[in-house]
Every structure is written in structure tokens, then in C-alpha cells.
Length: 386
Image 1: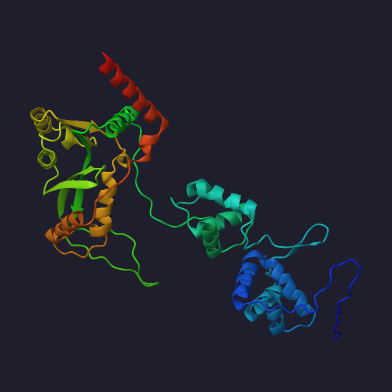
Image 2 (image 1 turned 120 degrees about the horizontal axis):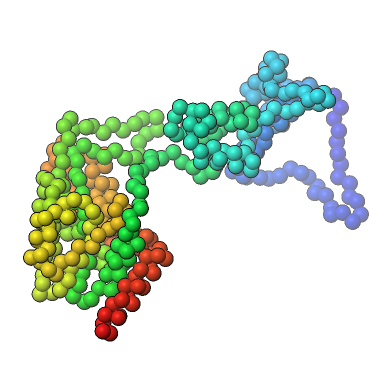
């Protein structure tokens, strides 16, 4: 076998060539380069290099060292070539055509994959509601002739910034009075007098049946959360004052208007008439807030006024974030066997962790809402002038 030795020759005008091409490169940098190489090169390009080097008489050990691949890859490519399963074909002119197979997420492939992810699987004949990596791989093969694995799809999805996570239920926010209600709440929130207060109120269900959530666990295992056998419930009614982060609450075994009236009694005691002339309580449209007994209570306490949230708009109520804290700290994946112990955990959390100074939702910063606030301000100024 002939071996060629190339000596550096300096040409006038060109920069001098280095005396040696041996690099003193840190192993960590070499590992990074090798990882980048394996992510970027086409599978069939590696196969062509392997086959040509085999034809030139190099053994698998040399080829693996030259191409930075494993010996098993060399054997696998040679075996596929002899079996005729490499996927190479010839066009009408007899030229060799590489298989349409890649492990690289190219721009056109990125667009095709994103288009699939935005469509429903049923549109492509799948009897399923969510895309799986295997379904995406099979669909790309049918549409574009790509021969890729489900694990390659999984890696591409991570490169696109997509993750596999649980969806959450949302309701359609289409209340015809949405702007007026949000504007009124924002108006009172921003223009409270010294003897006025505004709180956001709601109810929380406390179930002995644990809410299941993610947590750290050894790979390949799954943490088990025992069910209580028979579920039990307790209820909490709370009111959050966003300016101070204080959360006032009451507990009960029934979720009815009596529970809400107990909360109003607590607010009446916490904010006495000798100190506070006006109390605004923001609530949703749940039936217990509109009960006849509640209206009678309000008539007996004229300094209290209910402000209504838009229907199906929990994001507009900052107390929902405080209640989410309760679930994260107390009810998710809990191991309590008795309801009273779980309720005690919730009370301990409310007394220990806090205050809950959550900001108002961005819904209150929408241009239409701010325009409604300006209209209310102008209306108030006209009334004052009259």
C-alpha cells in the first residue's frame, strides 16, 4: 500500500503553514465536537464512507477510528449492503440516489413536523386524539418517505422546545359583560379610599382522595399514591386582600350559602364599620353567592357590595393562585389517612406560609378593560362636579 507524505510548502504571499497539524485539544472539547458531528451528519453519508473505506481494504478497527463511529456500525452497514437493505437506488440515468433518510432536523422538515403537531391525528387517518412519537414517525414516512424512528422524533420534539405534559381544562371566556365586569373591578381596585377595602373570594374543595402530581423518583420506577378507599370532602371559603396578601378563611363540611355567609361574617368582624366604610367582595357566579339568604345578609350590611367576575374566567381571581398553593403544599400526593389531619395541614399552611401578594391578572391590563376604567373615572368626575 502506498503512503503519501505531504510536506508544508510556503508560497510567497500566502500565510505560513503551521509546522504541525497535531492539536492539543482538551478531551471535553473533543467530546462536544463529536456529539455535534453525530447530530449533524446524514446516516447515508456515514454509510458511503464506511463502504468506500472497506473497498479500499481498511479493517473495521481502522474505519471506526477514522470516522469516529463504533465497530458495530461498520458491521451493520456492511451487512445491510450485502443484503441489499441500505435503501440506495438508481434513477432513470443510472445514477446512484441516496435514500431519503436523515437524523437531522432540517428547516423544511421542521416546518413539516410543526404542521403535523398543529393538526389533529384524525385528519391523517389515526384513531387517536393525541400525537405519539410513533404516529408522527409513521406519518412522516407516508408523506415524505422519511425512514426514522420514534426516538428520533422524540429528540426532534425536544429540540423544538416541545415537552410531554398534562393538559389542563379551560372554559370558554365569552361573557358578554366581560369588559364591564373586569373594568369595574379594576376601577375599584385602583381607586380605593382610605376607608375602603377590596377582597377576592372563592371556595376550595379539600378531598381526602389525593390530587396526583409530578415528583422526583428513581428512573424506571413510579411512585404509588394510595387511595383512601372512600373519598371524604371538606370545604374552605377564603377571601384574599391583594394589597396586603392576607387570606381570611372559614371551614365547613358543606359547600352552601351558609359557608359563604360565614366568610362574610369573618370579613365583617375583621374590617369593622368603625374603621372601614366600604367593603367590595369580588366573587364568581356560583349559585351560593346569589342565594336569597346572601341577599338578605347584604341588605343587613349595606357597606358590603359584591362585584361579579366574568363567567368562566378563573384567571381574573388571584385567590385561585393561593388555592393552587394549597394543593401544591398540602393535597397533592399527600399520604394522610384521615380527613381531619389533611384539613389540619391546610390550616397550618395558611397560618404559616404567606402573605400571598399576588398581582392582578394581565386580563385587567387589556386595552378594552383600561378604556372601561377611564370611562368609569370620567363618569365619577361628572357626578362629583354635579
